[in-house]
Amino acid sequence: MTKTPHTASSPTHIVWFVPEREHAQWLRIGALWPTKNGKGFTMSLDLSPVASGNLVILPNESKSEGGGA
Image (cartoon, rainbow, N blue to C red):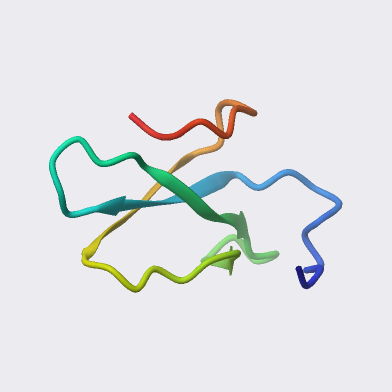
């Protein structure tokens, strides 16, 4: 995995991939950090989805890796 400049601080948001099928498990695929000027975000993806689905970005409220809502 490539180290990003943000590895020292915790991300403010987590990026989840939600496949387009019933009862699909959410997969954590990346994270977001606010830019220094506060006008945007830097996203780091560990995986790129190749199936149909949605990206859901939620606040980083928990340290669990289990899955989204």
